[in-house]
Image (tube, rainbow, N blue to C red; front, side, top):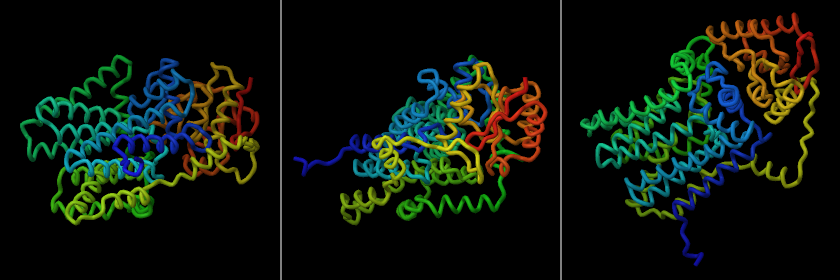
Length: 482
């Protein structure tokens, strides 16, 4: 009986879901990542302290992701697992709809191949496999569903739902616009009569999210300023040199697992001999990544739905037209695309062997940057050695420490943002609100990445009003003079 058993699409999706949970939960330190720390802090201030986004903390993300982490804190306190488990389940929905999309176009075999390509590549280090709780997961799922509803549309209701899903993706992340443009171009080419219905769906989603935001007290101007306008120009996250961009472009596109897709993508374009919806979708996503120019591993994930679909359809064509052995090809794809699982396996070993972390809390040269587990412990120390009413400021990129401390920062720019607007607000907030503790990093990242004027401002403030209390995890901890 087992000899004749063949895995179905649900078996593959469940297997990939389990693999994703292993990759994302069994991480060193079992702690919030840097970005998750920011969203946890802002979400907690929103749900626990009534400080809505952009008044209780600023980051360049949609309020929807802050709500996810605010709910996480409301239900389970400060934790790293809720957002990742939820993100994994949402991602699995995306895998399912990509399967349905490929199956609709080229049959069950194409659907199974799409699951394999997409599900495995999502687990790669080069695509940020452990960071499944990020906004890219949500916007990708909604865009995949939007494309599926467009491809399979039978009536105006389907086109409306396609627009509704596309708008939901846009609410999570602005990069969803590239998928929307791809669908728009496809409609323009073949289905112009349904363009208004599609855009009404998008508009309905946007109005719904803006209405919820309005009643929650979120300022729309702040969303536009912090989510879009202040992300470009001097001091912003996109303010990088051409050399830096060229090096990172090369690393992500030529020295990562993504090169495994290239033969299939070239094969797809050769077979089609034109740029169809999926080809245009891929080109637009690639263009968007280059416009932003950060080349983060999470940004690379945006390419995966189109790449996986195109690869699955290419292999299906080869199997059907050249009688290639399907079973052997699927096995080869799984072997080649399977992610490296060294980190989760080592952490399983630590758990089984009863490993006890003996991290040195002392400060000594060369002052290495503390890992995520150490930053979590430093946050816990602050929580246990301050009162809930005390404000705490962690200089530099200290979002994780701030999140685990469960203390409010004296400034909405609790994590370094170095645009002109951010600096002005930072200086103003710090003058108005003197925190009980100020933590200043000793490691090189602080000196190399934070501008001299901001570091000097913190140094002068410490010198004037604070005494050195102790040093922990390569942070000097200063306490305000009584």
